[in-house]
Image (cartoon, rainbow, N blue to C red; front, top):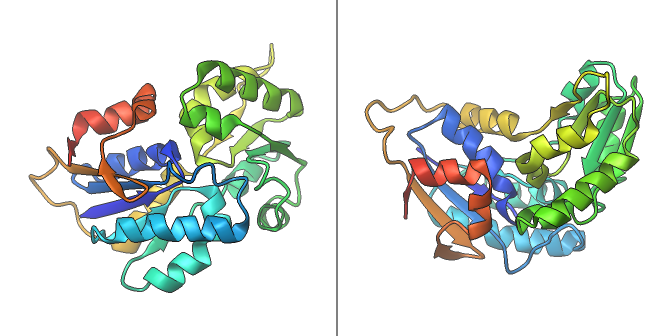
Length: 261
């Protein structure tokens, strides 16, 4: 089995780790776009064009499924990607975990890039799945870029700024950008209120990995779990994991258990 994941940058690491947990035998293709990131400030047309380039590069490696491990690309480019690649290549988008977050009754905060915050797409999800709870949309300017660059000071500043905009009574926070899942522990610590339970964070990595497995429905291949291959594509060029990826546990784990091709 071979699973491809695409994103503007290293936000795909969380979903890649989730895939590896479900299918340790799977070869992975990680296709990102360092030449074009960040995608968040781009127009929907630009995002779609960049996403097509990244997806086509991944598709050349003949994966069994393609995970769009990026909220921005899922918002703006998913229909175009599916129109071009399906049915030959199943394309699985990333949806912010608003529905499971609302199950707890709220209040709920949604951390997302400025481009996604207030978008018709996100407002539609709130209307469909969280209309019965109090929801606050929290824009997080610079956080995805800080995570991408493993810039510790910039991460701390962006997390602190977003935490200050989050209602003190929020009991659940949706991580509406895949990059944010890489710094979930820092976000949780920044949101902790003395005397109150920890805020529950809701990411999308586990759900999107599980959906990919359902789309493929391929049984685990015995005896091949050691040494699955990892192919890294940076704006279409075969490379190795970028240094920033190794700053996170998800990146180090992938490097440790994969034969990098």
